[in-house]
Amino acid sequence: MYLIHILYFIIGLVLGSFINVIIYRVPINLSIVKPRSFCVYCKYNIPFYRNIPLISYCLQLGKCSNCKKNISFIYPLIELSIGIIWLLSSLLFNDIIQIINYAVVSSFLVAITIIDYKHFIIPIQISIFLFIFISIILGFNQSISENIIGALIGTGYLSIILLVTWAITKRQGLGFGDIQLILVLGYWIGDFRILLIIFTSALSAIIFWLAISYYKGFDNKRALPFGSFLSINSIILYPIEFNYLF
Image (cartoon, rainbow, N blue to C red):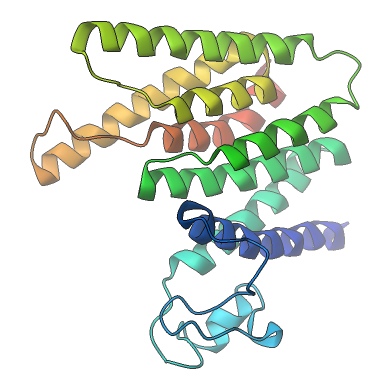
């Protein structure tokens, strides 16, 4: 029994390594296939035996084996986080389809979280992949009407907010990347429950904005990566709210 959970954790670590590649390369339009993994400082191609998720970072004491510069702790942290997501998914869900569904979607939402926070973009390639993947998963379900309703509700609601905000302030409060992401999330979560994701995301964004304003000073033009908050809240609330309370 325990071995299967360990296996899911290892799968998560491996996928986490690939997610790191996506996070670094997609925003700068580099191929995620080639060249193979390399040091971001000296461009040294990392051999496969030095590219073991999490373990290599620990063995090399967080430094590149070639140039000896420090490797950001974010890389192993992302690998560990996704490993934990896969482990939790195997513990929370009994059906293998649901395990893979939550684990894979959440893993790519981690990528969106980091990319949007660092670059204020939500790559459409990831959104398209998630939409296709979710469609395949839903293919095992007889009815997808609730999922389509969720996509329409989420997209429609955020689109109205976008238009109203622009009409009042003449500023684009939300990006089109947020709209494409909420379409995917609504499709994943289904029906009116996507509104809870939007509400908790807005609330956490406000709290984050107030905290930043306290430490860095008030700036009403300070942008927030709303896609990051949508992604994080979806990862947290999907198994809690949508698997148990509804």
